Image (cartoon, rainbow, N blue to C red; front, side, top):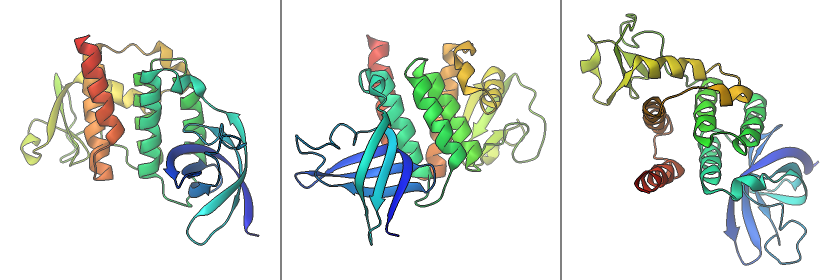
Length: 252
C-alpha cells in the first residue's frame, strides 16, 4: 500500500512554490520523514493551521519516489505556547534542529519520540534552558553519543578536582596528565561535571527542582554546544541564535 498513517511531530517547515510547504516529520513508527503538504498555504486550506513547526498529530501520507505527500492531518497538540514566547520558541526550534541533524530518515526512534513530546510539553511551563540541557544529554544517550564523564577518557584515571577539563574532540573529560592531548579543552568545575552526570538520568518531569547556579549553567551550555557540534560536524544555527539572544538579554 502506498498510503500510510503515522503519528508525528513537525520539526521543520519550509515554503515551497506559492501554495505548498516542505515538511520534516519526526514520526513514532518511521523516524524522520520528508514530505510535501500541497495547498497548505492557501487561506482556506484545512491543513493551514496544522502544518506548523512543533505541531504533534496524526498524518496520512502517500509514498512518493523522492518525497511523500501529506494527504490528511489531524492536530493533537499545536504547542502554541512555544510560538508565543521568544525564549521558548528559540529553545523549541533548537531541539527540533538537533532531531533533524541526528535522526536518520526512515529509522524509528520510539523512545526519543516520546522524550521529545515530553520535553515540548514541559518546555511550555518550565525553565527552557534547563529543559534543553536535559534533552541534549538524553538524546546523546539514546543515540549512542554519551560523553565519557566518569574518568579520564584517555587513561582512565579518576577525576578528583577541584577542576575538570572537557574535550569535545576526545569525547569526554581529561585528567591533569592528559590535558596536553587535546587542543579544544574547556575548563569546568566539578559541580558542572557532577551536574552533567546527573542530567543524563534525571526525570524530565522533575526539572523544576534542579538547583543550578548561573555559572554551572553557562559551563554546561558551552560543553554541550561544542560537543554536539563536534558530533554533527557542523554548527547549529539555532544554537548561535540562542547565544545572541542571551547576549542581548544580558545587556538589557
